[in-house]
Image 1 (tube, rainbow, N blue to C red):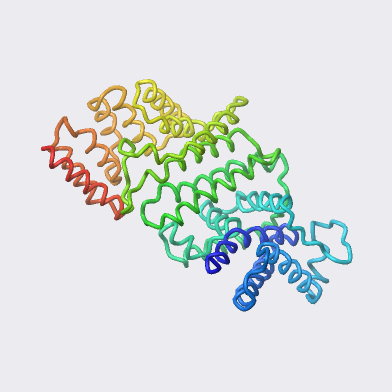
Image 2: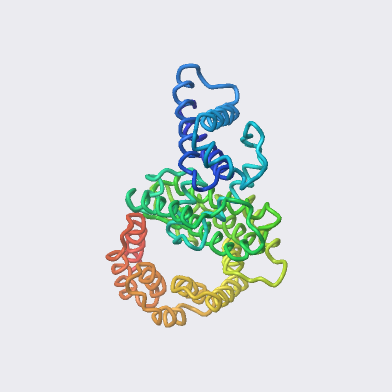
Length: 412
């Protein structure tokens, strides 16, 4: 238990304390904030191993972080010459700086950090990497593992983003209405990408890491929904979408880490509480005239939490996909639409639509064609599945395709 506690606290509390210190000092002093918090956890590692766990480990960390911050500021000439005039952007200074680690200030600092990290001057890849690092407490190696890349790439993305924030003199402060209007799209995209990496990435079988990514995306989105100024319909729609998807997380893979197709999922493993929560946020998202991709995708995800295969269900999903493709075309969305089309109009109609897409570098394209041709031309179905197997790079996907090939061969 003790061995697990400190890493868990590092994940949850590191980001909070760093966020508060950056909120206090400004982004140009981000390394100081990170050093103070890292030193706090180093002290915890050393002292807890000797003295045992304190009665309230989180409170202990907060107290030590506050003291280390004050000690650093007192002895630092940087504080006297550069930092003091800028703290809270010329807010009045008392003799002793107060490090506010209240729940409200932590939430405020996290919200301010999200909008700073998602500044338009930073590339989307760097936004996601920096968000995972600063806002979610993920280490460089964890981020590299999540995105199936190497740590040097992630390290460079994070450093480029930090330097860009300093060059642009981006202030970490509560966003104005204009800034919310300008950057909310970037913020939601970053959260969506973060979530998608956790939910859809089958390239690795680290289920804990994938769940952590999803949980962090939902936490960040909840910060937006919880705050009056950023509580926009699109944010509620994205949170609804994530609730619906995560409700089926445990039913999507078997014990070997292989994907389980939707129609084969065990409905009893679906989290009904999360489904109800998704319905609540989708209802909240329905106010006003705004219609985002998140509204439409949340609608599609909602229907997938209704296991019974009815015409109403698949017609609704098809119409939602039609609207999504008009609003924001995506080849993958178009591919997914053809499955709904097969459920409403039959496999032959869906095959004709799917083949128009001609996504010959995508293994999901050939997997879908294999599914659609099954029962119509099994030999052709087998060819498509074998092609999907050949071009797939994920071990998990390969295992699923092999299982489908074996099932088809047994029926031929």
